[in-house]
Length: 89
Image (cartoon, rainbow, N blue to C red):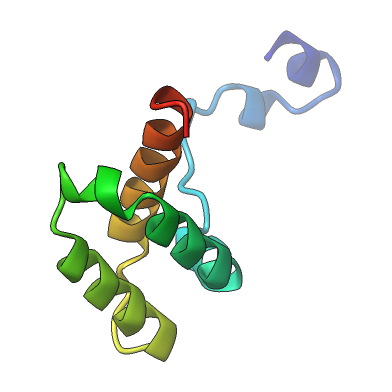
């Protein structure tokens, strides 16, 4: 903020901090094959915590462009990667 004020950007330096949402839909759609592989590799582990059939359904809906399930798929992907890393996969 101090640097912005020094450079003459007083208006910007006084704005409140704001977060941003990552482009999950683009991220999911551009990596959907790899995400599907991670889900498949983690199927046994994921099935302990979430309904794997519903996850597969959401993935196919996303792939076909029928529904934006990117938030749910991202959360499941992060869980799958975490389970893989903590279970000695």
